[in-house]
Length: 165
Image (cartoon, rainbow, N blue to C red; front, side, top):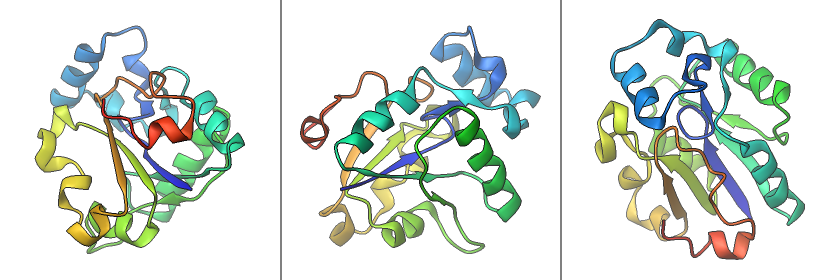
């Protein structure tokens, strides 16, 4: 079982989002607050590292999907994950001409967890809706509210496979 989790907006957020409501965090992104570009200071949304460790203990391979593209960007993302105690796993990103769907189709997860992209256009900015049907048939999509975190998702992977939000 491979679980691919989107980073930014799904399990990580800008530090200035701490102590704010989910709606305020969305507004910060819409308003392009400078803090959203301070990638190295990103923090977990709730306690996602704990949730991912629970799934890993059940045998899941955990992987991450980044919004960023360069090797240095991915090193920063990996450092943020390590700093906050996330399970070790590859960090996937788009190559120069790729869309997110290409990355997901290449990674071939069993479960894709992403947020609803409220601040950047909603469904049209999400990944799963753009994945080709033959891949969608093999990937369980789990969508959470942007900046809402994953703490509320089931601890049992078997329940996650049937999660409908």
